[in-house]
Image 1 (cartoon, rainbow, N blue to C red):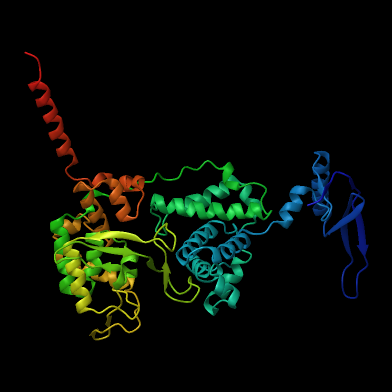
Image 2 (spheres, rainbow, N blue to C red; image 1 turned 180 degrees about the vertical axis):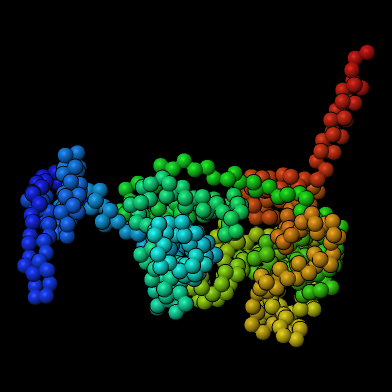
Amino acid sequence: MNLSYDVRIYKIEVRTYKAARGGKARTSYRVRWAVAGEKFGDTFATLALAESFRSKLVTNQREGVAFDTATGLPEPMAREQRSITWLQLAVAYAEMKWPRVSAHHRRGIAETLTGATMALLVDSRRGAPADGVLRQALNSYVFVKPRRTGGPPPAELADAVAWLDKGTVKLSELTEAARVRKVLDSLALKLDGTAAAASTVARKRAVFSGALLYGVEEGHLDTHPMERVKWIAPEKDEAVDRRVVVNPHQGGRLLDAVRKRTPELTAFFGSMYLAALRPEEALHLHKHEYERPREPGGWGWLHLGGAVVEVGTAWTDDGSANEYRSLKHRSRKTVRSVPAEPDLCKLFDWHIETYPPGPDGRLFVTRRGPGGMYLPATGRPVTANARLNAWHGARQAALTPDELAAGLAPVPYSLRHACVSSWLNAGVSPTLVAEWAGHSVRVLLNIYAKCLYGEEEAAFRRILAFRKEHEANKPG
């Protein structure tokens, strides 16, 4: 934007037009001014409107505000006129990030931008579709690059997309702290109005901040709007609640219930409970990545080389429902080796013999269809819905009413927590446990510090032993 302080503002010019046939005479009022020798003008229907606009020009001139040589307007007014909408920036940011991030991250970006956009709709909602329709349009079309660039929206979303194109505030309004705070407050809540997890809020805040930073980089914003907002995010509580972590007896009951109801998933859940695999790591496990014990009853190894994440067909480049990716926070070439205790090796041996691996060698593929069991043909990974249904059924069958009421092992991931906790309680060094589990030592201790059973008792015994030794060696 080229600016100049060389500004001249003229008197309002009154123009009268004779009445056309069958019409009335009319008068218009034209404001004229010049910036750096270039003349500008704007015409108004009433004198009041013309005087109001001219007074803005005069006020800016007297206050020493520079004028834009392209539009002739004072710099703040020119910036407002040129300002793009929040939606335009959000779409540009989503499209810029699309080829650079994983399918899972793409979905997370769209989810966050959808929530931010709903908080940045214009105050006048005249003609706006229902919020549910607007959210669907944003999350399933507007922020999905292949769909947005591939053609018009579905008929049921067309009106919502059209309304949204003009229905969000301009970026210039994000200079108001209240606007930014409103977005941050909305990102801290779930759709049902309850508080979101601290980790979720942190992730969404980072995406929103990234979009605004992109606006600064592209010249749409002078400064990052969040820098002027004092907003305290919820504190992170990463620690696992020890009350929901199963003990060995409860874990055994759960695996027995799985074996009776969905036997083809026993080894899948067993790999989480006895080797601390993440669900996506277990889904990626190939037959050749299982190293059998050298002798019967011995320990084996699982050499993990990747993960399978179910994200939906809209977010992957090839239209698959699953994304095949590297281990969490690791490069594609990284392999993490995890020991497989004898009971897990027996379970894997039984699984491979009973349920042959899929065509690509993966152990845990879909084996159920209409009518019951069938051998895998496509090698499609077990779906999240199938895994959750099997887990919820096993919980109902294996746990007591009191255990269910206490929320014991609410999700399959609870088995991984139980395994890591058992390793730590068995005295395995945190460094080694962190390596096996795919954590840093700091994160490991933050998450599992509350799950160390027996630590107090051991400490009490050491203190008493010290006291007795001290008393025994006391002179006299």
